Image 1 (cartoon, rainbow, N blue to C red):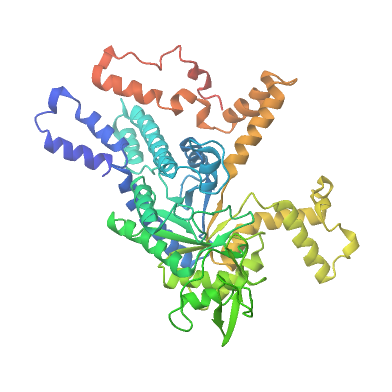
Image 2 (image 1 turned 180 degrees about the vertical axis):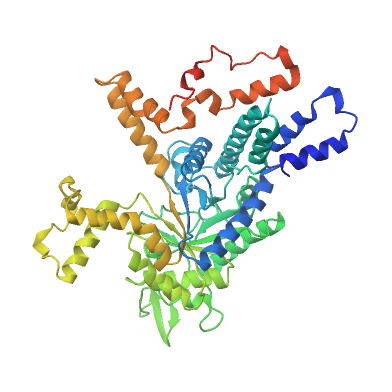
Length: 528
Protein backbone atom coordinates (compact mmCIF):
# COMPACT_ATOMS: atom_id res chain seq x y z
CA UNK A 1 0.00 0.00 0.00
CA UNK A 2 1.03 3.61 -0.49
CA UNK A 3 1.80 5.88 2.44
CA UNK A 4 -1.55 7.64 2.00
CA UNK A 5 -3.44 4.34 2.08
CA UNK A 6 -1.45 3.07 5.04
CA UNK A 7 -2.04 6.25 7.02
CA UNK A 8 -5.77 6.20 6.30
CA UNK A 9 -6.01 2.57 7.43
CA UNK A 10 -4.09 3.30 10.64
CA UNK A 11 -6.32 6.25 11.48
CA UNK A 12 -9.34 3.95 11.24
CA UNK A 13 -7.65 1.26 13.31
CA UNK A 14 -6.47 3.68 16.00
CA UNK A 15 -9.33 6.18 16.07
CA UNK A 16 -8.63 6.81 19.74
CA UNK A 17 -4.85 6.90 19.39
CA UNK A 18 -2.12 4.28 19.03
CA UNK A 19 -0.71 2.37 22.04
CA UNK A 20 1.87 4.11 24.25
CA UNK A 21 1.10 7.42 22.62
CA UNK A 22 3.02 6.52 19.47
CA UNK A 23 2.41 8.94 16.59
CA UNK A 24 0.31 7.23 13.92
CA UNK A 25 2.23 9.05 11.20
CA UNK A 26 5.44 7.51 12.52
CA UNK A 27 3.94 4.02 12.26
CA UNK A 28 2.82 4.79 8.71
CA UNK A 29 6.30 5.99 7.84
CA UNK A 30 7.97 2.82 9.12
CA UNK A 31 5.48 0.63 7.30
CA UNK A 32 6.08 2.56 4.09
CA UNK A 33 9.86 2.35 4.41
CA UNK A 34 9.61 -1.42 4.88
CA UNK A 35 8.95 -1.89 1.17
CA UNK A 36 8.58 -5.71 1.30
CA UNK A 37 7.41 -7.91 4.15
CA UNK A 38 9.59 -10.91 3.24
CA UNK A 39 12.12 -11.81 0.59
CA UNK A 40 9.73 -14.42 -0.74
CA UNK A 41 7.39 -11.50 -1.46
CA UNK A 42 10.27 -9.98 -3.42
CA UNK A 43 10.61 -13.14 -5.52
CA UNK A 44 6.90 -13.09 -6.34
CA UNK A 45 6.88 -9.39 -7.24
CA UNK A 46 10.09 -9.44 -9.28
CA UNK A 47 8.97 -12.52 -11.23
CA UNK A 48 6.01 -10.48 -12.46
CA UNK A 49 8.39 -7.67 -13.42
CA UNK A 50 10.49 -10.08 -15.48
CA UNK A 51 7.43 -11.56 -17.18
CA UNK A 52 6.20 -8.09 -18.13
CA UNK A 53 9.65 -7.22 -19.48
CA UNK A 54 9.75 -10.44 -21.51
CA UNK A 55 6.36 -9.62 -23.05
CA UNK A 56 7.57 -6.11 -23.89
CA UNK A 57 10.67 -7.54 -25.55
CA UNK A 58 8.58 -9.93 -27.65
CA UNK A 59 6.85 -6.87 -29.11
CA UNK A 60 9.97 -4.74 -29.51
CA UNK A 61 13.51 -6.15 -29.39
CA UNK A 62 14.91 -2.74 -28.44
CA UNK A 63 13.32 -3.30 -25.01
CA UNK A 64 16.04 -5.67 -23.83
CA UNK A 65 17.14 -5.79 -20.19
CA UNK A 66 20.60 -5.52 -18.63
CA UNK A 67 22.48 -6.39 -15.46
CA UNK A 68 25.91 -6.30 -13.90
CA UNK A 69 27.28 -9.09 -11.75
CA UNK A 70 27.57 -8.02 -8.11
CA UNK A 71 29.46 -9.80 -5.35
CA UNK A 72 28.09 -7.71 -2.47
CA UNK A 73 24.91 -5.95 -1.54
CA UNK A 74 26.74 -2.63 -1.64
CA UNK A 75 27.77 -3.17 -5.26
CA UNK A 76 24.14 -3.85 -6.21
CA UNK A 77 22.94 -0.84 -4.24
CA UNK A 78 25.43 1.54 -5.84
CA UNK A 79 24.62 0.20 -9.31
CA UNK A 80 20.92 0.89 -8.81
CA UNK A 81 21.57 4.32 -7.33
CA UNK A 82 23.71 5.25 -10.34
CA UNK A 83 21.06 4.08 -12.81
CA UNK A 84 18.32 5.97 -10.98
CA UNK A 85 20.41 9.17 -10.88
CA UNK A 86 21.16 8.94 -14.59
CA UNK A 87 17.88 7.68 -16.03
CA UNK A 88 15.34 8.54 -13.34
CA UNK A 89 14.02 4.98 -13.41
CA UNK A 90 15.25 1.42 -12.86
CA UNK A 91 13.15 0.02 -15.68
CA UNK A 92 14.92 -2.90 -17.44
CA UNK A 93 17.76 -2.99 -14.87
CA UNK A 94 18.47 -6.27 -13.04
CA UNK A 95 21.17 -7.74 -10.78
CA UNK A 96 23.21 -10.75 -11.85
CA UNK A 97 24.49 -13.07 -9.14
CA UNK A 98 27.50 -14.89 -10.52
CA UNK A 99 28.50 -18.31 -9.24
CA UNK A 100 32.02 -17.50 -10.43
CA UNK A 101 32.21 -14.49 -8.10
CA UNK A 102 30.71 -16.42 -5.19
CA UNK A 103 33.43 -19.03 -5.69
CA UNK A 104 36.13 -16.44 -6.18
CA UNK A 105 35.18 -13.93 -3.49
CA UNK A 106 32.24 -14.86 -1.27
CA UNK A 107 32.81 -18.18 0.48
CA UNK A 108 34.52 -19.50 3.60
CA UNK A 109 36.99 -21.64 1.69
CA UNK A 110 38.98 -18.78 0.16
CA UNK A 111 39.48 -17.64 -3.42
CA UNK A 112 38.38 -20.60 -5.55
CA UNK A 113 37.96 -21.33 -9.26
CA UNK A 114 34.49 -21.69 -10.74
CA UNK A 115 34.16 -25.42 -10.07
CA UNK A 116 31.32 -25.62 -7.51
CA UNK A 117 33.76 -26.28 -4.68
CA UNK A 118 32.39 -23.53 -2.41
CA UNK A 119 29.62 -24.11 0.10
CA UNK A 120 26.31 -23.69 -1.68
CA UNK A 121 24.70 -21.74 1.15
CA UNK A 122 26.97 -18.81 0.25
CA UNK A 123 24.84 -18.28 -2.87
CA UNK A 124 21.72 -17.97 -0.73
CA UNK A 125 23.53 -15.66 1.68
CA UNK A 126 24.50 -13.28 -1.12
CA UNK A 127 20.94 -13.08 -2.48
CA UNK A 128 19.75 -12.25 1.03
CA UNK A 129 22.47 -9.62 1.42
CA UNK A 130 21.75 -7.95 -1.92
CA UNK A 131 18.07 -7.54 -1.14
CA UNK A 132 18.82 -6.31 2.37
CA UNK A 133 21.04 -3.60 0.83
CA UNK A 134 18.48 -2.62 -1.80
CA UNK A 135 15.72 -2.41 0.80
CA UNK A 136 17.92 -0.22 2.99
CA UNK A 137 18.40 2.13 0.02
CA UNK A 138 14.60 2.38 -0.03
CA UNK A 139 14.56 3.22 3.67
CA UNK A 140 17.25 5.89 3.36
CA UNK A 141 15.61 7.68 0.44
CA UNK A 142 12.12 7.48 1.88
CA UNK A 143 13.37 8.72 5.24
CA UNK A 144 14.80 11.76 3.46
CA UNK A 145 11.41 12.43 1.89
CA UNK A 146 9.67 12.11 5.25
CA UNK A 147 12.20 14.58 6.67
CA UNK A 148 11.11 17.03 3.97
CA UNK A 149 7.49 16.35 4.91
CA UNK A 150 8.02 17.65 8.46
CA UNK A 151 6.69 21.17 8.65
CA UNK A 152 5.52 21.21 5.03
CA UNK A 153 2.01 22.49 4.44
CA UNK A 154 -0.57 22.86 1.71
CA UNK A 155 0.55 22.20 -1.86
CA UNK A 156 4.14 21.55 -0.79
CA UNK A 157 3.00 18.81 1.59
CA UNK A 158 0.79 17.22 -1.07
CA UNK A 159 3.69 17.25 -3.56
CA UNK A 160 5.99 15.46 -1.10
CA UNK A 161 3.31 12.88 -0.27
CA UNK A 162 2.88 12.26 -4.00
CA UNK A 163 6.64 11.57 -4.23
CA UNK A 164 6.41 9.14 -1.32
CA UNK A 165 3.35 7.38 -2.76
CA UNK A 166 5.03 7.13 -6.19
CA UNK A 167 8.44 6.08 -4.89
CA UNK A 168 10.20 3.51 -7.10
CA UNK A 169 11.84 0.79 -5.04
CA UNK A 170 15.51 -0.05 -5.59
CA UNK A 171 14.56 -3.73 -5.42
CA UNK A 172 14.97 -5.28 -8.85
CA UNK A 173 15.01 -8.84 -10.25
CA UNK A 174 18.02 -11.03 -9.54
CA UNK A 175 19.16 -13.67 -12.02
CA UNK A 176 20.84 -16.13 -9.65
CA UNK A 177 23.38 -18.73 -10.72
CA UNK A 178 22.81 -22.19 -9.22
CA UNK A 179 25.75 -23.62 -11.22
CA UNK A 180 24.93 -27.22 -12.19
CA UNK A 181 22.68 -27.70 -9.16
CA UNK A 182 25.31 -28.65 -6.57
CA UNK A 183 24.39 -32.33 -6.57
CA UNK A 184 21.58 -34.61 -7.65
CA UNK A 185 18.10 -33.54 -8.68
CA UNK A 186 16.82 -33.43 -5.09
CA UNK A 187 19.78 -31.32 -3.99
CA UNK A 188 19.02 -28.93 -6.85
CA UNK A 189 15.41 -28.64 -5.72
CA UNK A 190 16.36 -27.98 -2.07
CA UNK A 191 18.91 -25.31 -2.98
CA UNK A 192 16.52 -23.69 -5.45
CA UNK A 193 13.94 -23.35 -2.66
CA UNK A 194 16.42 -21.59 -0.40
CA UNK A 195 17.43 -19.23 -3.20
CA UNK A 196 13.79 -18.39 -3.92
CA UNK A 197 13.03 -17.80 -0.24
CA UNK A 198 16.01 -15.43 -0.20
CA UNK A 199 14.35 -13.47 -3.02
CA UNK A 200 15.49 -14.99 -6.33
CA UNK A 201 12.78 -14.74 -8.98
CA UNK A 202 15.02 -16.18 -11.69
CA UNK A 203 17.41 -19.12 -11.48
CA UNK A 204 20.04 -19.98 -14.06
CA UNK A 205 21.25 -23.57 -14.30
CA UNK A 206 23.77 -25.18 -16.66
CA UNK A 207 24.01 -28.59 -18.32
CA UNK A 208 27.39 -29.59 -16.94
CA UNK A 209 27.93 -32.39 -14.45
CA UNK A 210 27.84 -31.27 -10.82
CA UNK A 211 30.96 -33.10 -9.67
CA UNK A 212 33.23 -31.91 -12.50
CA UNK A 213 31.73 -28.50 -13.23
CA UNK A 214 34.04 -25.99 -14.95
CA UNK A 215 33.87 -22.30 -15.72
CA UNK A 216 32.18 -21.86 -19.09
CA UNK A 217 35.31 -20.24 -20.50
CA UNK A 218 37.76 -22.95 -19.51
CA UNK A 219 38.54 -26.33 -20.97
CA UNK A 220 37.49 -29.72 -19.61
CA UNK A 221 33.72 -29.15 -19.59
CA UNK A 222 31.56 -32.26 -19.30
CA UNK A 223 27.86 -32.15 -20.16
CA UNK A 224 25.04 -34.37 -18.95
CA UNK A 225 22.46 -36.14 -21.12
CA UNK A 226 19.48 -33.95 -21.95
CA UNK A 227 17.04 -36.07 -19.99
CA UNK A 228 19.17 -35.53 -16.86
CA UNK A 229 19.17 -31.78 -17.43
CA UNK A 230 15.41 -31.75 -18.00
CA UNK A 231 14.94 -33.35 -14.59
CA UNK A 232 16.90 -30.52 -12.94
CA UNK A 233 14.88 -27.91 -14.83
CA UNK A 234 11.75 -29.59 -13.52
CA UNK A 235 13.20 -29.55 -10.00
CA UNK A 236 13.67 -25.78 -10.15
CA UNK A 237 10.16 -25.30 -11.54
CA UNK A 238 8.68 -27.40 -8.75
CA UNK A 239 10.53 -25.27 -6.19
CA UNK A 240 9.00 -22.12 -7.67
CA UNK A 241 5.54 -23.68 -7.72
CA UNK A 242 5.73 -25.03 -4.17
CA UNK A 243 6.62 -21.59 -2.83
CA UNK A 244 3.90 -19.82 -4.78
CA UNK A 245 6.19 -18.01 -7.21
CA UNK A 246 4.00 -18.91 -10.16
CA UNK A 247 5.82 -16.54 -12.53
CA UNK A 248 9.31 -17.74 -11.61
CA UNK A 249 11.78 -17.64 -14.48
CA UNK A 250 14.28 -20.38 -15.40
CA UNK A 251 17.36 -19.77 -17.54
CA UNK A 252 18.67 -22.99 -19.13
CA UNK A 253 22.34 -22.66 -19.99
CA UNK A 254 24.15 -24.92 -22.44
CA UNK A 255 27.93 -25.27 -22.40
CA UNK A 256 27.93 -27.72 -25.30
CA UNK A 257 29.60 -25.32 -27.72
CA UNK A 258 32.87 -25.68 -25.84
CA UNK A 259 32.26 -29.04 -24.14
CA UNK A 260 33.72 -32.05 -25.89
CA UNK A 261 33.02 -34.65 -23.21
CA UNK A 262 30.17 -36.46 -21.50
CA UNK A 263 30.20 -38.53 -18.33
CA UNK A 264 27.65 -41.13 -19.26
CA UNK A 265 25.76 -42.60 -22.18
CA UNK A 266 21.99 -42.35 -21.70
CA UNK A 267 19.68 -45.30 -22.29
CA UNK A 268 17.72 -45.01 -25.53
CA UNK A 269 14.23 -46.50 -25.40
CA UNK A 270 13.15 -45.75 -28.94
CA UNK A 271 14.60 -44.32 -32.13
CA UNK A 272 14.96 -40.56 -32.07
CA UNK A 273 14.35 -40.05 -28.35
CA UNK A 274 16.46 -37.57 -26.37
CA UNK A 275 18.96 -40.26 -25.42
CA UNK A 276 19.46 -41.30 -29.01
CA UNK A 277 19.77 -37.68 -30.14
CA UNK A 278 22.48 -37.12 -27.52
CA UNK A 279 24.35 -40.34 -28.22
CA UNK A 280 24.52 -39.86 -31.99
CA UNK A 281 27.17 -37.15 -31.56
CA UNK A 282 29.63 -39.41 -29.73
CA UNK A 283 32.95 -40.12 -31.39
CA UNK A 284 33.03 -43.83 -32.17
CA UNK A 285 35.09 -46.45 -33.97
CA UNK A 286 34.27 -49.90 -35.34
CA UNK A 287 33.53 -52.34 -32.53
CA UNK A 288 36.03 -55.00 -33.51
CA UNK A 289 37.95 -57.09 -31.03
CA UNK A 290 36.05 -55.80 -28.00
CA UNK A 291 38.03 -56.30 -24.80
CA UNK A 292 36.48 -57.16 -21.45
CA UNK A 293 34.81 -54.11 -19.96
CA UNK A 294 34.46 -52.23 -23.24
CA UNK A 295 31.14 -50.82 -24.43
CA UNK A 296 29.56 -51.01 -27.86
CA UNK A 297 26.57 -49.14 -29.33
CA UNK A 298 24.23 -49.83 -32.19
CA UNK A 299 24.38 -46.68 -34.35
CA UNK A 300 22.74 -46.48 -37.78
CA UNK A 301 22.65 -50.23 -38.08
CA UNK A 302 26.30 -50.67 -37.19
CA UNK A 303 27.95 -51.79 -33.97
CA UNK A 304 30.30 -49.00 -32.86
CA UNK A 305 32.62 -48.49 -29.88
CA UNK A 306 32.51 -45.01 -28.25
CA UNK A 307 35.91 -43.42 -27.74
CA UNK A 308 36.61 -43.41 -24.03
CA UNK A 309 39.33 -41.53 -22.17
CA UNK A 310 41.41 -43.07 -19.36
CA UNK A 311 39.24 -41.22 -16.82
CA UNK A 312 36.13 -42.94 -18.18
CA UNK A 313 34.69 -39.91 -19.97
CA UNK A 314 33.36 -40.17 -23.52
CA UNK A 315 34.32 -37.84 -26.37
CA UNK A 316 31.96 -36.08 -28.75
CA UNK A 317 32.76 -35.80 -32.44
CA UNK A 318 34.79 -32.72 -33.31
CA UNK A 319 32.94 -29.69 -34.70
CA UNK A 320 29.50 -30.80 -33.47
CA UNK A 321 29.09 -28.15 -30.79
CA UNK A 322 26.70 -25.96 -32.77
CA UNK A 323 24.36 -28.85 -33.56
CA UNK A 324 24.39 -30.00 -29.92
CA UNK A 325 23.71 -26.46 -28.69
CA UNK A 326 20.65 -26.14 -30.93
CA UNK A 327 19.28 -29.50 -29.77
CA UNK A 328 20.03 -28.63 -26.11
CA UNK A 329 18.10 -25.37 -26.41
CA UNK A 330 15.08 -26.95 -28.05
CA UNK A 331 14.99 -29.71 -25.43
CA UNK A 332 15.29 -27.24 -22.55
CA UNK A 333 12.37 -25.18 -23.85
CA UNK A 334 10.03 -27.93 -25.02
CA UNK A 335 10.77 -30.70 -22.51
CA UNK A 336 12.25 -28.82 -19.56
CA UNK A 337 9.89 -25.85 -19.55
CA UNK A 338 12.71 -23.30 -19.42
CA UNK A 339 11.82 -19.66 -20.09
CA UNK A 340 15.14 -18.30 -21.30
CA UNK A 341 18.26 -19.78 -22.86
CA UNK A 342 21.95 -19.11 -22.26
CA UNK A 343 24.47 -20.17 -24.88
CA UNK A 344 28.02 -19.92 -23.55
CA UNK A 345 30.28 -18.89 -26.42
CA UNK A 346 34.04 -18.58 -26.85
CA UNK A 347 33.90 -15.22 -28.65
CA UNK A 348 31.38 -12.37 -28.89
CA UNK A 349 30.14 -12.72 -32.45
CA UNK A 350 26.62 -11.51 -33.23
CA UNK A 351 26.30 -13.44 -36.50
CA UNK A 352 27.48 -16.75 -35.00
CA UNK A 353 25.06 -16.50 -32.07
CA UNK A 354 22.20 -15.44 -34.34
CA UNK A 355 22.81 -18.48 -36.56
CA UNK A 356 22.27 -20.85 -33.63
CA UNK A 357 19.31 -18.97 -32.21
CA UNK A 358 17.53 -18.80 -35.56
CA UNK A 359 17.73 -22.60 -35.81
CA UNK A 360 16.13 -22.86 -32.37
CA UNK A 361 13.43 -20.41 -33.43
CA UNK A 362 12.45 -22.70 -36.29
CA UNK A 363 11.02 -24.95 -33.57
CA UNK A 364 10.31 -22.43 -30.77
CA UNK A 365 9.57 -19.07 -32.46
CA UNK A 366 9.64 -16.94 -29.29
CA UNK A 367 12.91 -18.37 -27.95
CA UNK A 368 14.82 -15.74 -25.98
CA UNK A 369 18.33 -15.58 -24.58
CA UNK A 370 20.31 -14.29 -21.67
CA UNK A 371 23.78 -13.53 -23.01
CA UNK A 372 27.04 -13.36 -21.09
CA UNK A 373 29.01 -10.31 -22.25
CA UNK A 374 31.93 -11.90 -20.48
CA UNK A 375 35.18 -10.29 -19.28
CA UNK A 376 36.72 -13.62 -20.35
CA UNK A 377 36.58 -12.22 -23.89
CA UNK A 378 39.27 -9.79 -24.99
CA UNK A 379 36.62 -7.49 -26.43
CA UNK A 380 38.99 -5.03 -28.03
CA UNK A 381 40.96 -7.74 -29.83
CA UNK A 382 37.87 -9.73 -30.87
CA UNK A 383 36.01 -6.77 -32.32
CA UNK A 384 39.07 -5.38 -34.09
CA UNK A 385 39.69 -8.80 -35.65
CA UNK A 386 36.07 -8.94 -36.80
CA UNK A 387 36.32 -5.51 -38.41
CA UNK A 388 39.59 -6.47 -40.10
CA UNK A 389 38.07 -9.68 -41.51
CA UNK A 390 34.94 -7.87 -42.71
CA UNK A 391 36.96 -5.14 -44.41
CA UNK A 392 39.23 -7.68 -46.12
CA UNK A 393 36.19 -9.63 -47.34
CA UNK A 394 34.57 -6.46 -48.74
CA UNK A 395 37.79 -5.33 -50.42
CA UNK A 396 38.16 -2.18 -48.33
CA UNK A 397 41.65 -3.16 -47.13
CA UNK A 398 44.37 -5.67 -47.94
CA UNK A 399 45.44 -8.35 -45.44
CA UNK A 400 48.79 -6.61 -45.06
CA UNK A 401 47.20 -3.31 -43.97
CA UNK A 402 46.65 -4.51 -40.40
CA UNK A 403 48.30 -7.24 -38.32
CA UNK A 404 46.43 -10.47 -37.67
CA UNK A 405 47.03 -11.09 -33.99
CA UNK A 406 47.48 -9.49 -30.61
CA UNK A 407 49.29 -6.53 -32.21
CA UNK A 408 45.79 -5.19 -32.95
CA UNK A 409 45.52 -4.43 -29.22
CA UNK A 410 48.08 -1.65 -29.61
CA UNK A 411 46.94 1.79 -28.45
CA UNK A 412 48.05 3.20 -31.81
CA UNK A 413 44.80 1.78 -33.24
CA UNK A 414 42.61 3.55 -30.65
CA UNK A 415 42.05 6.53 -32.95
CA UNK A 416 42.59 4.62 -36.18
CA UNK A 417 39.56 4.02 -38.43
CA UNK A 418 39.62 0.29 -37.63
CA UNK A 419 39.76 0.91 -33.89
CA UNK A 420 36.98 3.47 -34.07
CA UNK A 421 34.77 1.10 -36.05
CA UNK A 422 35.42 -1.66 -33.49
CA UNK A 423 34.42 0.74 -30.71
CA UNK A 424 31.27 1.67 -32.60
CA UNK A 425 30.36 -2.02 -32.83
CA UNK A 426 31.11 -2.44 -29.13
CA UNK A 427 28.72 0.37 -28.32
CA UNK A 428 26.03 -1.23 -30.48
CA UNK A 429 26.79 -4.85 -29.55
CA UNK A 430 23.95 -5.34 -27.06
CA UNK A 431 21.42 -3.60 -29.28
CA UNK A 432 22.52 -5.68 -32.28
CA UNK A 433 22.45 -8.98 -30.41
CA UNK A 434 19.03 -8.18 -28.96
CA UNK A 435 17.66 -7.49 -32.43
CA UNK A 436 19.42 -10.19 -34.45
CA UNK A 437 19.97 -13.01 -31.97
CA UNK A 438 16.94 -12.94 -29.67
CA UNK A 439 18.86 -11.72 -26.63
CA UNK A 440 16.36 -10.48 -24.05
CA UNK A 441 18.91 -9.97 -21.29
CA UNK A 442 22.48 -8.72 -21.59
CA UNK A 443 24.73 -9.14 -18.60
CA UNK A 444 28.38 -8.80 -17.63
CA UNK A 445 29.29 -11.54 -15.19
CA UNK A 446 32.35 -10.16 -13.41
CA UNK A 447 32.49 -6.36 -13.76
CA UNK A 448 32.66 -5.67 -10.03
CA UNK A 449 35.52 -8.19 -9.65
CA UNK A 450 37.55 -6.35 -12.27
CA UNK A 451 36.29 -2.90 -11.27
CA UNK A 452 37.32 -3.38 -7.65
CA UNK A 453 40.72 -4.68 -8.74
CA UNK A 454 41.25 -1.68 -11.05
CA UNK A 455 40.20 0.93 -8.47
CA UNK A 456 42.39 -0.61 -5.76
CA UNK A 457 45.31 -0.91 -8.17
CA UNK A 458 45.11 2.74 -9.25
CA UNK A 459 44.51 4.08 -5.74
CA UNK A 460 47.31 1.99 -4.24
CA UNK A 461 49.81 2.98 -6.92
CA UNK A 462 49.11 6.65 -6.34
CA UNK A 463 48.64 6.66 -2.57
CA UNK A 464 51.74 4.59 -1.81
CA UNK A 465 53.59 6.37 -4.61
CA UNK A 466 54.16 10.05 -5.25
CA UNK A 467 50.56 11.30 -5.18
CA UNK A 468 49.75 10.34 -1.57
CA UNK A 469 46.40 11.92 -0.56
CA UNK A 470 45.95 13.47 -3.98
CA UNK A 471 45.43 9.99 -5.41
CA UNK A 472 42.34 9.48 -3.25
CA UNK A 473 40.96 13.01 -3.39
CA UNK A 474 41.43 13.61 -7.12
CA UNK A 475 40.38 10.20 -8.40
CA UNK A 476 37.67 9.26 -5.90
CA UNK A 477 36.31 11.90 -3.51
CA UNK A 478 36.33 14.86 -5.90
CA UNK A 479 34.68 12.76 -8.59
CA UNK A 480 32.05 11.49 -6.13
CA UNK A 481 31.13 15.06 -5.22
CA UNK A 482 31.02 16.36 -8.77
CA UNK A 483 28.96 13.47 -10.12
CA UNK A 484 26.51 13.41 -7.17
CA UNK A 485 27.44 9.93 -5.97
CA UNK A 486 25.40 9.67 -2.78
CA UNK A 487 27.97 7.44 -1.06
CA UNK A 488 30.29 10.44 -0.67
CA UNK A 489 28.14 11.07 2.44
CA UNK A 490 29.05 7.63 3.73
CA UNK A 491 27.39 8.00 7.16
CA UNK A 492 24.08 8.88 5.54
CA UNK A 493 24.48 6.09 2.98
CA UNK A 494 24.58 3.41 5.64
CA UNK A 495 21.61 4.76 7.58
CA UNK A 496 22.79 7.18 10.26
CA UNK A 497 19.80 9.42 9.53
CA UNK A 498 17.50 6.42 9.88
CA UNK A 499 18.79 5.99 13.41
CA UNK A 500 18.30 9.66 14.22
CA UNK A 501 14.74 9.57 12.91
CA UNK A 502 13.83 6.52 14.98
CA UNK A 503 15.34 8.02 18.11
CA UNK A 504 13.16 11.08 17.59
CA UNK A 505 10.09 8.90 17.06
CA UNK A 506 10.61 7.13 20.36
CA UNK A 507 12.23 9.85 22.48
CA UNK A 508 11.38 13.21 20.96
CA UNK A 509 13.63 15.97 22.28
CA UNK A 510 15.60 13.45 24.34
CA UNK A 511 17.03 11.86 21.20
CA UNK A 512 20.81 11.83 21.05
CA UNK A 513 21.41 12.27 17.35
CA UNK A 514 24.47 11.78 15.17
CA UNK A 515 23.49 14.34 12.54
CA UNK A 516 24.20 17.53 14.45
CA UNK A 517 26.28 20.52 13.45
CA UNK A 518 29.55 18.74 14.21
CA UNK A 519 28.84 15.83 11.85
CA UNK A 520 31.52 15.98 9.14
CA UNK A 521 28.99 14.91 6.52
CA UNK A 522 27.82 18.53 6.59
CA UNK A 523 30.97 19.37 4.61
CA UNK A 524 29.36 17.79 1.59
CA UNK A 525 26.05 19.66 1.71
CA UNK A 526 25.36 21.22 -1.69
CA UNK A 527 29.00 20.65 -2.56
CA UNK A 528 28.26 19.40 -6.04
